[in-house]
Amino acid sequence: MVYNNPYFDVKTATLGAAIMGPTVFLINYYHGTDSAYIAAAKQAAYTFLVGGSMIRMCENLTTSFKNPKVSKAMAVIIPSAITFGLTYGIHSLKGTLRPFVSSIPTLLLAPPAFAFIARRKIRQLERLAGEKEE
Image (tube, rainbow, N blue to C red; front, side):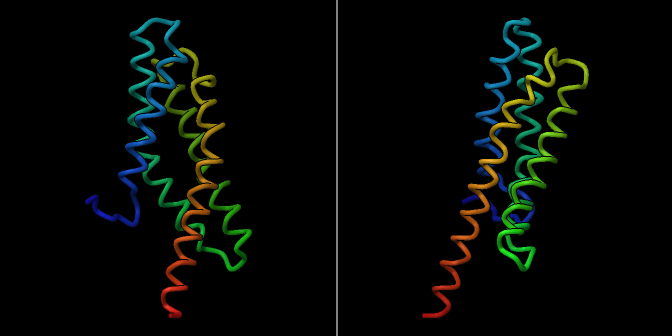
């Protein structure tokens, strides 16, 4: 059983790293395997370390505002913006030949992923509230 940390989601971070690392490798493959491995390693490490925290931020933002629509919107917008900015920043460091293109998967996948996570958290809270009423 994975430790339930309120600030880091190990399970989802590992899954994200396993998906994003190979994706960035393929994007950079035509520039040579050395460059592709560097970009993929940076992406996988970043996705694991920062992604696990962003997942928890999304879940926490889901319940942070009185208006549930505002909460869900902020739970998607804030982590998505931070994630894209940090991803582009890490790829802009020496070693990734196509930093913006390497960041596009994050730009495309982060908002729907955070929307899914926010909805999952809302459903979890609704189930808990229903159990308490019984």
